[in-house]
Image (cartoon, rainbow over all chains, first blue to last red; front, side):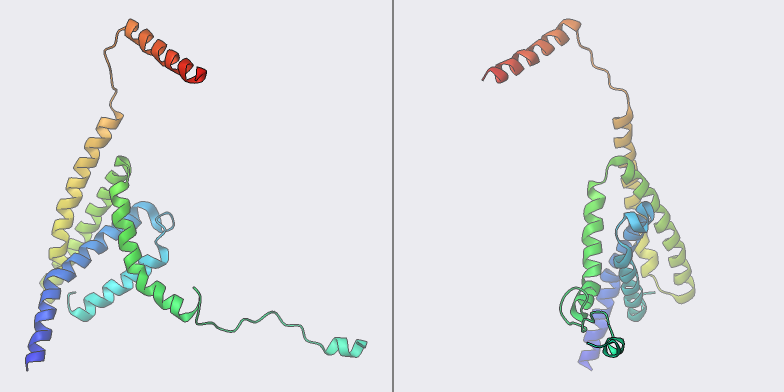
Length: 64
Length: 141
């Protein structure tokens, strides 16, 4: 099945590049929120949405 | 209007029907959910670069701690679940945070150290006089 092979290769590339990059970015943003607290950083709702999206993407993509 | 009719009248607040338009509408909510990650990434990456050195040092400390915690979780994930992205993703984070911390601490030291300049009192007087003379010439113009 060629489309399955394509899907598998896309997933491999995403696992290799996108997942570590997104997780690193998540670390940066968490550190920013920790440094300035959730209110002063101005990222309350955005941070919650971002965390949920990252977690969902990582779990569904099989990265974590 | 009789008293009976007045008693029968029901006063209700202004009810606004649910709108698809505007910020509080369904499209606005969906758009904010889609835009939240974009906005957070652009804001944080921009702000990190323009932070003053003392705040940058604090941020680098927190980044190092977060990276170490996620690295430990990633190590467990790798051992138990055989999944490596979390472990691998935090290695550059540790290096970059250490580098940022070193840079920021250097800048903080330069900013806080006492600066001394060797200058003669006559030179100081001349400099002050030149400032005054220039100021006077500007005022006269």
